Image 1 (tube, rainbow, N blue to C red):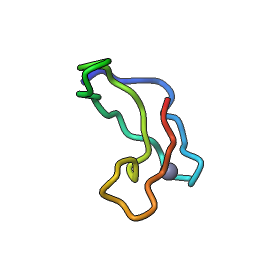
Image 2: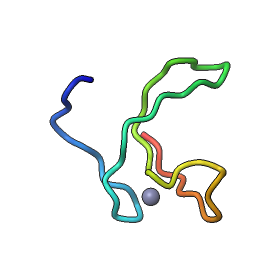
Image 3: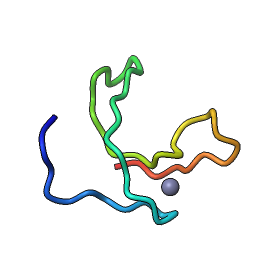
Length: 49
Ligand SMILES: [Zn+2]
């Protein structure tokens, strides 16, 4: 895993984590998202970069 100089901070104040998208459109694309990103959370955070 490569080191990145800047870790984005989410709208909710948490440091974003690196996720990998596996949707059909952009399979394997890596992006920073909130650790609360995802539909399994009651209030998922929409932060995405
Ligand atoms: Zn967030």
